[in-house]
Length: 294
Image (tube, rainbow, N blue to C red; front, side, top):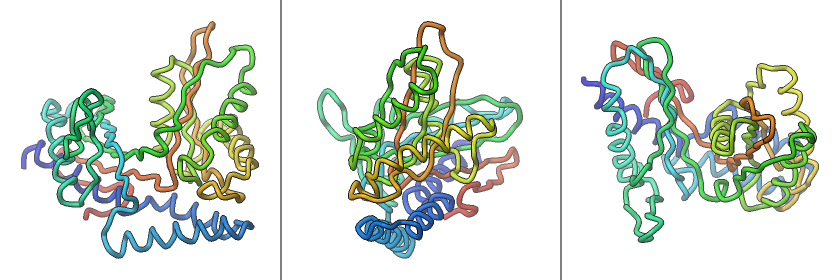
């Protein structure tokens, strides 16, 4: 089977996996939040979320009616042949998934306000490319919901404020977002580079499993500190109060210009959907997040 058809089939499976089955690390984090929640209202909301997860799997239906804007991350081995065919394969997979899963059509022309009806359009699905050594192709899809997207922010901090300025920026951002991003959330935080670099890194940080702390001990410590700080806000599940406003914090960074300190916070709602697979040179496929095709 040629690469274009293999990629289309794998991407279709990933889209179906992502919108129906939450990754195990997110499910376990939600269960832990339910067990530890002391607010009766917050506990009720978390129970509803866990019931929703179970029903989505049982009935093979999307876990949320907002199946998001489709974003793909492509880690392509430099020896892979036919890379020019990948984009078309991913577009076709998105169209198929919209019709067959089904996904809600979420691609709207900002000038005409017309919905394409199939989740595709100019730069949608959006593709993030990374060229790496080897002959395999790794695909990750993140269907990004509108509620969490609406509160993502970038900002220019005062360089002299350093990490304390970053902490203040994140906490204020979470408080301002309140219930809008359907908490409990996952936060991707990034600093450095430039405004566009920071938000791209923040979104990419959302792909790291909650069970994997940052490999840099100092950054891992900062992630814990920010997690504790934002959970002290008491916003709680669905904004109705409780201990868990955020399930996890993942931080990424780039070197910055001496005169600027760009920072970004990307939110994912509790339905933090992602799915990954690796396509080997011989055409075999390994599903990495869900361990099976669908």
